[in-house]
Image 1 (cartoon, one colour):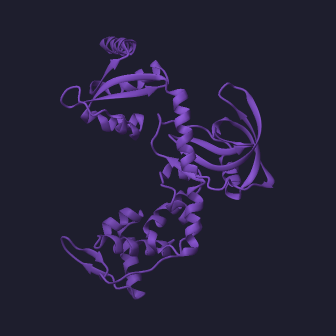
Image 2 (cartoon, one colour):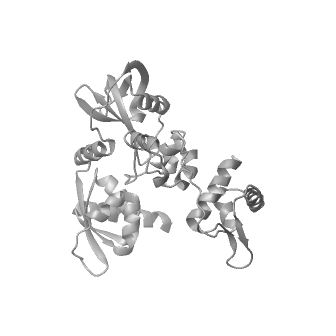
Image 3 (tube, one colour):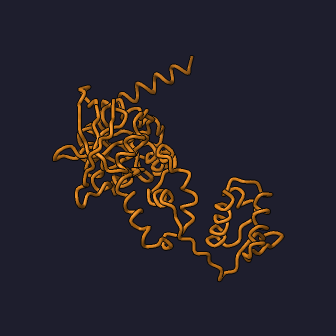
Length: 320
């Protein structure tokens, strides 16, 4: 672990120039005393670390000093190219490789390591433009991940949205995480579908391997699938006006894509008119109430009435 930390120190100093012991200790989650001992070790090994005392001081390397570190491990390459949100990666057991991987410059990857980057990108995709955040229990994520990694067929029992139990033989192409929900993208016969991991009741890896469809792109498939899925789910249309200062919070609860849906015309100074879709009236009411006075529903009138009634009940509740 100390060797990794010394490498991290060198990469930080190369990228950011002068840094204090306190800054390095915070980044590496160690004490300042440990940083000073590490600096002594680097100096003893011949690394030209300079130390400047006083205000604006800190540790630095000569401007011409460069350390070529191209020995990325496979887990580090995987972590680097996942477009990472750290929390879901811990479920896959590779989150601990993130910090070290991000310190190693992309253009330092040797040619033989580049296929590993493309390999992982097409097997795990993290969709950060979230729905309403959720947490689900996923019992078989380890087995599913192994089947994706080893490109082996699998047999699973799956509960669809109607409650019907299906017995399927699949070709697991990749994993997608969205708003705390994990999906398995898999081929079944002539079709490719996305399956929610929390609905898998049993999952067994088979001995037979499979060939991925030539040109299959996990991110592109997910984007197309999501459009079809949301077209079926999001049928409750709402026109509302949002204060400009409320747009960042709206993006947090509805996803960053709401910014792209903003219309150019301003209903009145400082307010933007948006048309959004929800699954139903109740979900629309609950989401929009979170915006408080920074949003106002224009249509439909029954949603305006629902929000008014709910707010009145809240006032009555706290008036007592």
